[in-house]
Image (cartoon, rainbow, N blue to C red; front, side, top):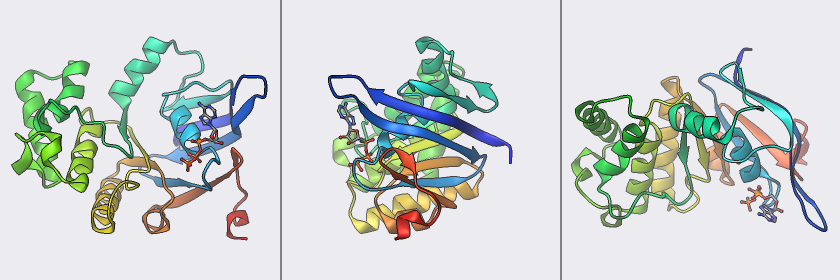
Length: 229
Ligand SMILES: Nc1ncnc2c1ncn2[C@@H]1O[C@H](COP(=O)(O)OP(=O)(O)OP(=O)(O)O)[C@@H](O)[C@H]1O
């Protein structure tokens, strides 16, 4: 398998009088087009691992490759550029900008990247909103939407720069079950279309929609089957 994302021996420890190891020697590979869920008990290090894989945090040890490129020696600026151009994020709380319309929120990452003209960015943003049934809400502010609608806009925003990889941290954690299923179907549909997705979740129904589940325990990958006992 040629992995789109590969990690070898990732370690993240918070220093202090009593250092806390959040991620403890995690090695994994994610293939292009895979939809993988990271599961595990509260405090097992799921979000910490996702932040390392999403270049939002830097490991103290270990190595990481994205699309064949080794990232361990990248500067903060290089990591920020990679996040903007190659990764898309969906969080539990949508983090849409409250004073911007839905359309402006989805256009923003394209404006920051600057690879499209304003007209092309608007057209792409409208296309994405259309894809998630949100085109009719393009002129609204996030506060005028339901939680599920906001999350679908957040998914559209995550796709703005055609990322290699979508990383989602409890994307349905704040939603009722109908909205949750809708977001689950949305992410499943993206993976069916070839998009690579990694999602942290507590929700077994959500995880069942993934191609593969990774289980963490105390910052370590649990051996296959260990989580069932
Ligand atoms: N900034 C921090 N300072 C101190 N401890 C932290 C910090 N961030 C995380 N931790 C601790 O590290 C461990 C892993 O946290 P993390 O958020 O990655 O777990 P998680 O599996 O995502 O948990 P949850 O499912 O509850 O969101 C937890 O014990 C948490 O309390």
